[in-house]
Picture 1 (cartoon, rainbow, N blue to C red):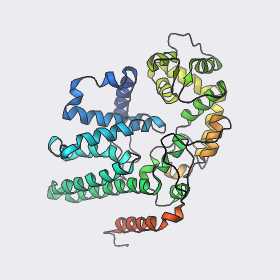
Picture 2 (cartoon, one colour; picture 1 turned 120 degrees about the horizontal axis):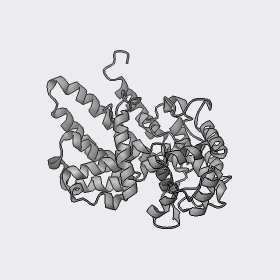
Picture 3 (tube, rainbow, N blue to C red; picture 1 turned 180 degrees about the horizontal axis):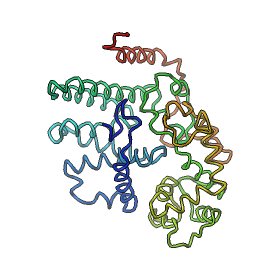
Picture 4 (cartoon, rainbow, N blue to C red; picture 1 turned 90 degrees about the horizontal axis):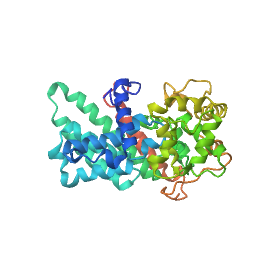
Length: 368
């Protein structure tokens, strides 16, 4: 649990060797493309499907923390998870620990039906986890069971109230809707919602590209825009080590910005990435982005505690104007239309959850 950073005692733990391994696998998948990377029939065995699920769901979150890349495979991972669970096949093919990683992607999906399915699965898993525990480990397994049930319910609660995860709004540059700022600033906001603080470098480089090409389309960054950015940093687009080869991977003269950012993070482009970060335009943008994200703009990045250091409800409108050079944030194409409601419309439900959380938190404590 420490290695995977799960649980209230693991939030500050990070296994650098394991993270390095995850990064190497993600980089290989980037270079080869998912179709080629997962072409080996071994990926279709029970263990192979489990490994694939962990890669596209968990590895992405660790390696590309704070960027839209962390969520890029959520729909595919949830779909694969449901396939594995068809006719309860996961009960015969996987042990109880492996099943947790089968169910985890279900809780990440911004889809209410998938969330309902996740609650059904984690509830059954929790019973099995405790039932299989030897007497000396029963209390530990009960605690793990309670913690994960609580987290899955909190994910589903957010989808029930808002149709999406409000804590992702800043990373996705989508404007807050009715009630979401209040949810984000609530003192009982779930801990897991602080584990993806927006990456200032991601937004600073995007802002620099917007200033290189007027009317830049973020899903189609052109060769010309990237070449101008490289020139501005004193780099040559014609250099054999130039990241211009991203367009070969993309198969055209344009590439989505998240793919470009992922390409720049490859080890062979480390010097280019550092040069782009140090150029005055990008450095100034990064400093301003940090000022929007942090309660104290002078704090070092990344913050030791996102919960205590970051603004809980980040000003997405200001962030979008900064990045896009004056534009206002827009909803993503697949976002759920606003029903026009406010947090007041759902506050009775949220109040029930607050009381439930307090009761669970205090259970077994003499002070309560």
